[in-house]
Image 1 (tube, helix red, strand yellow):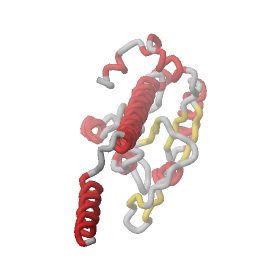
Image 2 (tube, one colour):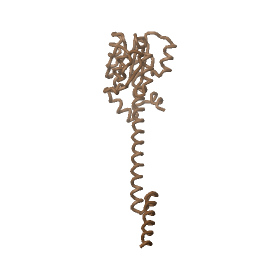
Image 3 (tube, helix red, strand yellow):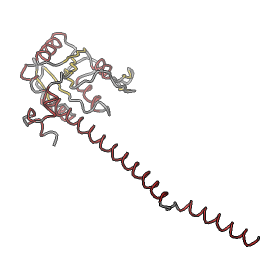
Image 4 (tube, one colour):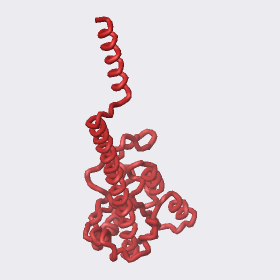
Length: 219
């Protein structure tokens, strides 16, 4: 259902109207300085806040994932202070490719929902399909154009709406739990006021009364 939001005129929805006023933050990853400068300029032209890094390992570090340098696996995730709304990464990079970075992001419990877009100067269908199957939202051919950047916002809005929905569901769930707990406490108090006692308490009182009756007979 959330995928349908991408094809709709989201400006008609109050929730999306509020999102449109937000400056979204994009993390751009590319080992090529000219390509980093280009994507940074295009994103800023489109009113995005931009952070650029030159490697996949630095991207993971910025996202709060420490990397095991021996096995090159993400370990000990820590929440980053700055929220990242979308990641756009080059495919061909030394050390860690864009595809490797994509897999690590999608394998993280708290990063997996962040939209990821892959860029490449090579049009290789098998590579494109592999990235899309792994969870990439888009695959752009370099040089990236402004028309490509215009495709990013629907993916961010879809992600933001999903987060908003999950947060709303969590609040409703917590509210139900609190309400149920309050009702339970209220029922116990009402039962005590009406003289309705729990079975264990009633059993102890019966034993005390029985003991008293026996002593009275002995007297």
